[in-house]
Length: 211
Ligand SMILES: O=C(O)c1ccccc1NCC(=O)[C@H](O)[C@H](O)COP(=O)(O)O
Image (cartoon, rainbow, N blue to C red; front, side, top):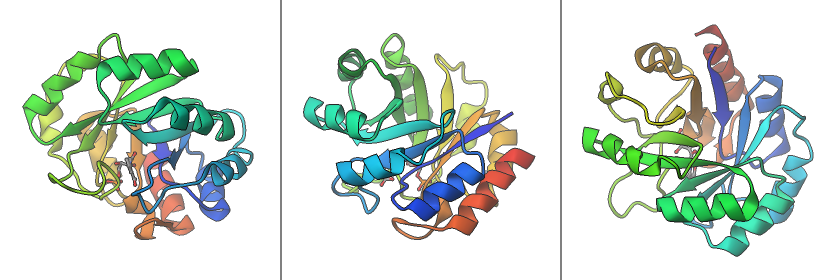
């Protein structure tokens, strides 16, 4: 069975749709440049609505220790999702917080995938996400998809999840094609950047459950 993380939640309504649709994880973004950025207070209010059994994931871009510590406390995080973060920093943040870590691997070519091996021993899971263009404001959440055939025959060095450009219309094919046991979505369940749509969240989670 494949499970799903709904990322970049900032409203009660969208969070409730993710919970009702049985998402396995919900993601809160702590990155000021993102339209999905949440304050510590907002993260705390959202976290309080999340029932046991659903993982709270904090999303960061090469974060400072202080940011991670406060977000982990106020957002009651279970997982740190770390973009553009070197393996040694991932190890450090895992030790600092005692939390599970997911290292994002930005994928455009097979060589990008091979670079995932440097996280062995450093992280608990890899999140294969589409590489965003050089100079882009965000390293994720842009609705970009990478070539899933790059995963054909790839020997995954760690547990992994698939991300990047997923939506209700393509997620079943993505799961069938790659064998992903965990998928992650953000802009594919939005009506505009940062504006989550409860109906699209429900459709996405139904498509994952039916896949
Ligand atoms: O979503 C953001 O704004 C974001 C900002 C900074 C770092 C990571 C970010 N998103 C990471 C995610 O986990 C997204 O769900 C993932 O990149 C997929 O996004 P999308 O292609 O829009 O579904």
